[in-house]
Image 1: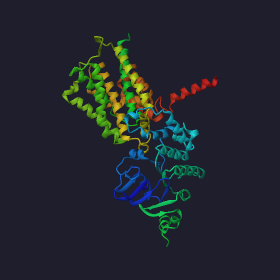
Image 2: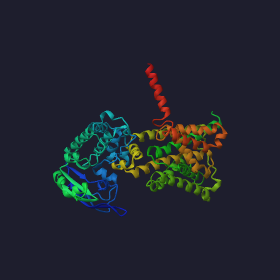
Image 3: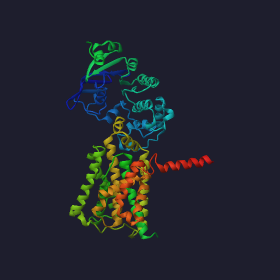
Length: 248
Length: 297
């Protein structure tokens, strides 16, 4: 049984087909790359999986169970963490508190549990460890809005990891980063994979994709046009067409 | 003994402070704008007045029940209200205020434009409380509300509110049930406003619909914004300053709403965090002077 199974997934926005009959599966401990030109429907796919949008048709199964009608908070509690294409840290909270919010996922469902204090040494210790792992230790008390972009992206990953996820959806983590920043980020993503977490990675930087992913799904105009290893994708004529246009 | 005039001002300001504190839970902590907070103040005042004069309940039961009723109405109105965002929420809450005021004004059951009278100060030890004692009672209750607020700030609930205030979509993605926590803030804020309404009714002994109109909501919001949205002491300081201001000189009383409006505009332009908010002028001056003292040592 795959960790995540997407079957014939479609989404229309008032007549505009953003996603059309997309199917694929992703396993634990695997980084599945999702690439495609702008407007191919990659972020729409993430918003469907994480429950921000309701699909027009199709199925999404996580660990063998449908998550189709669940709300974003329920999906995240099941163990699907995500980051955002345009970063959305909690700007006026400090780095540690950003991560702490996600640690609350097991307390929020019950009123009594959520009225308990978050000042528990074990949890604060785990927060520290995650902040350290994201390389943000010296900035723990800084407000998120004061961090440079690369740090914000790592903070978003640390925050998603605090959900103790089985699956992580990363939306263009290396976009806008310098070479060194993106190298640090790739290290972090590899570590996540080695931990046994499944990763869906939307990425435009082909170096990053080819380096990290053993398998890649290519979307174009809302449809899946190819799936395979980096080598197969590189030589696939449909993919080349989608990116560069038809040879005349 | 404190003079009658002074104690009247003190009690009025304390009730305003309680109102500003309660609105701060909704607007400051959870980040949900409300332009109709006075309606819950009114619902509390009328509930307490009705229970006391019609049903014969003593103060000690009617006022807590006023908080409960305001909290329940807050939940009922909050559930549809909180599915809309920002500007729509502002207009919806404003609409609620007009509806609630109109109900008090036009239903004979609530005394109409004549309002309701015959409400008294509470009794204890077989006699009526003095105003000074009443003021003490309000401060005591307020003390517990502040303790509760501090407790909330350190709980997962407070954290969930902060995350919703910062970014609803990201909060949802972190496991925060956005609608539920928003409603919780609305219920708690409304209940405390209802409590303040109960205290108000038993102090004035006579209430009218006009006490709980849209203008009153703006007065409460001005206090919160002036003092510092989201900080624990800011709204209280705002209530004290803006509450005493009209008492200092009568002309200010007449132009009260105008002055509050100008203050709101000025604060938004120059000190959006309020007097005690983060990155605003008072805490900065304070920090600088503390640093200066340390430096000299």
